Image (cartoon, rainbow, N blue to C red; front, side, top):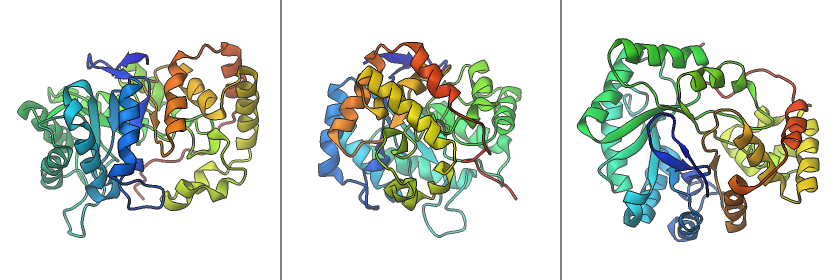
Length: 322
């Protein structure tokens, strides 16, 4: 396994992150703790030290599984979690307001069985709470020691710039990382977000690097993907151009005698600024294949052909305030 610095935090993380969203047993594709254990153990054996979850995954169960399976390795791993989405039916059980985030941090620490969260990320932008309020709240956790660094997730580049500028003006730590929607068939983050994040020295940890399995070549009919059906992402991967990109990925994979998933991950790791794609796994073979990718030697011409097959499209995967 190879490692990259996580932005400018000075922390080194594996070039593959294990996404813990697959574990929690609240959706058809999620696994409970006994089924999840071999994946975490295999990830550790393969040199993966970066694990990403969120409080809302399986309503906290993913964090519980993450904490239980990593508690004996706590000083050897980097744990990231997120906050924003509803955790109950009450009027203040969602968002990034101080009332909600204070409660959720304590609950995340308890579920993760740890005294610190290495990377605490906002899952989405909260349009009802000011950036000054949000950044002060998150920095209070850093000052207390419960959080080491803070990260952002899907939003527009101008919003992220506003957040970081607000932090700078207040003498606070800005977002150290960006967790964004980025893969070979969705590259709109290259317009402004990724150049901005690189200029700011932020670590980039893309989610959905295989487009919910489509870039792994698992589905001839994109509308049949389990993940796409259950989390509302189906319409994001219906572009007429997707087939051109998939054909380029398949050709490059065949020429290098690797899987489409490996080629798709290798392409993503070749992109400027990318630190560590977040990979979900419910089959050990898929995790083993992903862990091989950082060590693959692939001529850049193959990546260029995949890149050239893509055409720009409407921006998707952000929060909207209408």
